[in-house]
Image 1 (cartoon, one colour):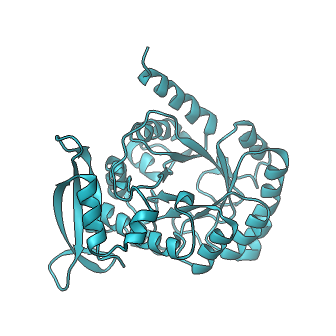
Image 2 (cartoon, one colour; image 1 turned 180 degrees about the horizontal axis):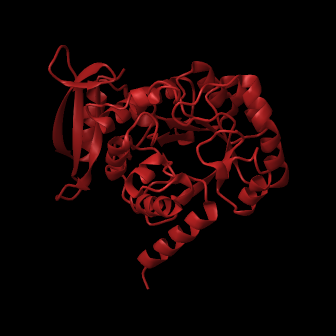
Image 3 (spheres, one colour; image 1 turned 30 degrees about the vertical axis):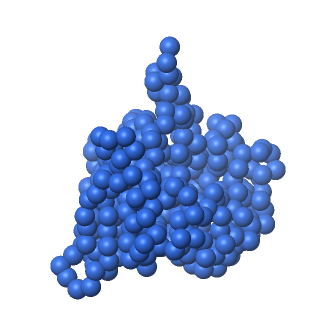
Length: 340
């Protein structure tokens, strides 16, 4: 575990080249902020990029790490350009949104291809709260045909949504470009496969497993805990030989977070611009229902509102069920911000 880490405030400092940061330092004993079971002290600072790099490299970070992951912990300016859209396909009987279940309606697969997302994410195991794990054999039987079909009829990059290394390897053999791992590449074998096949890696934050993650929604500071999780995992990814430009970070909206935790993450999403692209999945999730009182079938407007917001904050990837509708809204928003 790293001994010191930082992340930026949403607002920028007033002086040119100066930014405001939270700085966390590991400490023995208590009191202190409890992050993943370890105590940290917290301070705030106004720093230039040069002085920030000096702090990072002086304690808890090897110089090699800072050089390889250039831009680590530096804030990202929001970009009005449209994020890449990752379309969701679930080869499951029980994912939380029935409209994504291709096992129930094979036409959904063709509809997704026709909507031309930037990436198609295929999953064979439901990860809704309370969902049980399934065997690798069952997962492979669900996803293989869909992945084979997509790669045979179009050039859209395919992502496999799995936490099982065996599934990831089989799908990498079929040509998937992304491994989207809800367990955050905690398994060393998963990191080995990603390095071997040079796949893009979506590292998601979650506590425990989908079966009981709703029992783990309390945080002293959810943003700090997610950032610390990312830093620790990034060190492991580097040690496993995974290229920095293959890494994408996902804060895991809805995974071991309650509505307040989800809202805090979204409100402070720019604090997660720590040098790597962000992927955020808000599509039709329960926090939207908590605000609107609407069932999953009626949460598209809330999803689009969150997509526009995240585009305004410079998020690079959005994972969505409804590709065409989100794309249209984001393109209109981008045009409204363009100079005449």
